[in-house]
Length: 310
Image 1 (tube, helix red, strand yellow):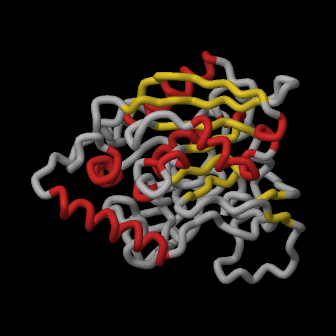
Image 2 (tube, helix red, strand yellow; image 1 turned 30 degrees about the vertical axis):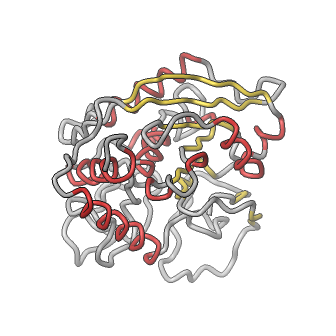
Image 3 (spheres, one colour; image 1 turned 135 degrees about the horizontal axis):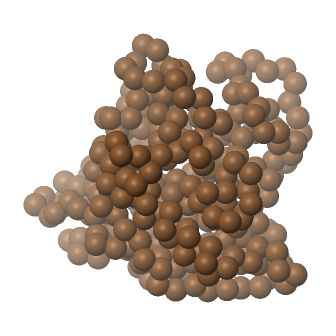
C-alpha cells in the first residue's frame, strides 16, 4: 500500500479509465508494504505508474466501521466530544548531510496549519471540528538509512521514538520517495500495536519544504484525519456506504489537481468533494472538513483515543 516506489511521475496525469482499460504501463517498483490499517496519500493517484491505489478495500473499511460501532455501544452515556487539545510529538529524521532537516519554525507552521484546518479557518462554510493541536516535543535523529528508507526500518524507528499514549499524536518526517506523500495508522489499531501508532510525512510536505503542489502542509491535515478515523472521500466509490459520512458526496475516484465541478457519481446527489481535506487534490485546493466528518472524528476519539474512555 504505502511502500510504492513510483517512477516517471508527471504532474497533471489524467485519472485512469475506471475499468482499468489502459494498455501501456510505465515501470513501477514495489517497496515494503505499510503495516495493516494504514492509508496513503499519493502525489499522483491517477498516474499510470501507480500499481496500488493505497485505498482500503470495502471489506477492510467495513471492519473498521464495525469496530467503531461496537466501541460506541459500550460507551453508552459517555460524552462524545473532541479533547481540548491533542499533544503532538514530531520526530525529524534527517541524513547526516543535512537532507531532511526540518526547522523548528516549519514545525510550528505545520501545527498552525492543523489548527487552522481543524477549526474551519480555510473556508467559512467548513466545520470547526473542535480538535486543536499543541506541540509538546521535537526529537531529531540523524541516520542515513532511516532517512532514505523509512519503510524498511519503520518498526524499529517507531518503537524507539514513539512517545505517549493513544491521545498523543506522533508525527515522523523522512524521505518517502517520489510519489508517496504520507500515511497514517487508524485509531482502531492502537491497542494492538501502540508503539506503531502515528502519522508519517514526507519531510518536504511540511510548510516551507518546497514540494510542488503539496507544500502547504495539508498532507499533515489529511493524514491526521486518518489518525482520527476518517476514510478518503472516495472510499467505496459510488457504492453505498461511501466514506461512512452522510454529508460528503459520493466520489468514484480520487481527485488530482483541483477538478472543481466534477461529478463522477451523477446518479448520487452533489458534486465531488474535491476541496475536502480527505481527497487527493492539490494542497491549495483543499479547504474544509464537514460537520459529519467532525462528528465521526469525535466518535473515534471517544471510542479509541480518549484517556477517559471506559
